[in-house]
Length: 123
Image (cartoon, rainbow, N blue to C red; front, side, top):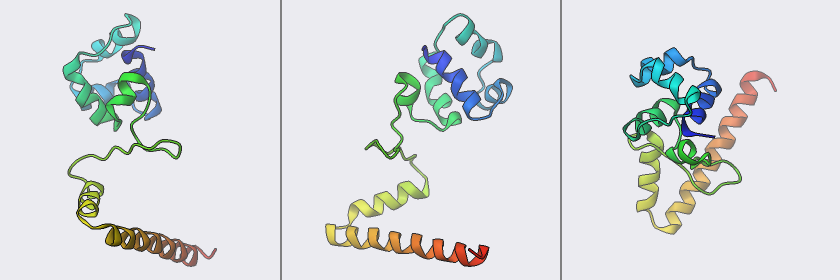
């Protein structure tokens, strides 16, 4: 599968139309159509904006294998400037003892949220 074909597939998976994708990336619809019909790939300067709009890791676009963490993978892609990035940055400054405490606290919060959700939904 070419990168262009993969882009078209990912656009569909995201529930986006080609027109919406074109508007969000600034890439003309005719160019996007050419990727599949002429088996062309996007220009290298378009890869970053494509990945940003599709919310994917470049490795997924370029090779078909994801750099985003799924249960069977060990790589996590986090965008700079997000709260997740901020949390991980703070976590990395902590020594192992405090890292363990932060993880335990996160699990406790998740359990609390689950209990709260169950109480509010009557389950």
